[in-house]
Amino acid sequence: MQFPITKLSFNTLSFLKQFTKATIKITAITVLFTLPLTTSHAAEQPGEGKSVTPIFPNIAEERFRGEIVIAGLEELGYEVEKPKETEYAALMLALAYGDADFSVHLWDILHDNFYQKAGGDRRLVKAGTTIPSVLQGYLIDKKTANKYNIHSLADFKKPEVAKLFDTNGDGKADLTGCNPGWGCEQVIDHHIKAYQLNKTVSHNRGSYFALMADTIARYKQGKPVLYYSWMPQWISGVLVPGKDVEWLDVPFTSLPGKNNDVNTQFQGKNLGFAVDKVMAVMGKDFAAENPAAKTFISLVQISANDESAQNLKMQNGEKSVADIKRHAKEWITLNQTTFDSWLKQARSAAK
Image 1 (cartoon, helix red, strand yellow):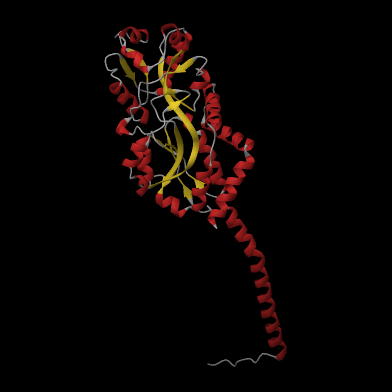
Image 2: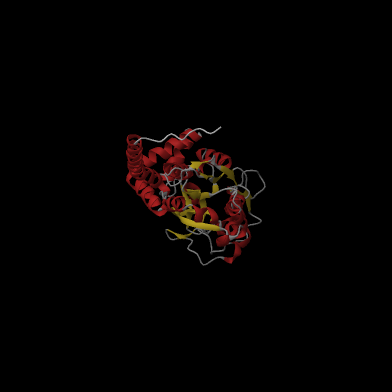
């Protein structure tokens, strides 16, 4: 059976034409008004829909600068995963092979061996100086230094000097050193050989801050102390160089890999370690695919004094992850104009 086709009246056809035109106009207007809003949102949030995995060393005192970066990436729309934590050598490998995306903990010279073994510039990208001009070296208490005229690590070749710093009765000076796997551990071991201190100095390695708690306790008891340290971190706020302790000179520059053409001088002394800088580092693929994140991370910079001050807050009890995040937010508020300029440049890079 066939149904007859009903003819549309002239009025009905006219109405449909007018309705269609009106619909097209409304749709066009909607698109015109919606498009700028969508474009504006995308410009403000170039990281929307993308996740980022940070990787940090497994000591809480180095998390502060990373939390500042995380806060900025979240402002840019990125979903930031829980940071992974590991030792420095493994950290570089994780970045090189895509198991994590960025870190802000590469000591440019001290960690160069780790960086090169992970593939160097073929797999990784150094992206900006996070903390400029960082120091490390050996220190002793000022009282013992002045009383016995000890101002160089070479003085510890003398058995009578070494015995002053003996804490376990073996006749050798006990040097509070580094965690196993840290770059400084390699340099300290190298120095003990290079300066012929094997018979008079022991490198005590382990959990650095636990070892330093014992060292500070000995200092407060009026006993001689010999230790390795670096700046920035809270130790220099408790044992203040120039006031409580002093840097030791070394007889000559000698670093692993014969990389001796670096500046190791500070205030007229050869500290034995390169005057260094802490850099941001990321996987090469991540850097290429995320210009906004790369730009922001490369711009973040804080002073050694700011990080030392934050570390001292941790030593005084504010040491939870929530505390560190709060410290980062407080720092951002105090430096809001600079922080906003980093975000602006990152958004421009995404265009």
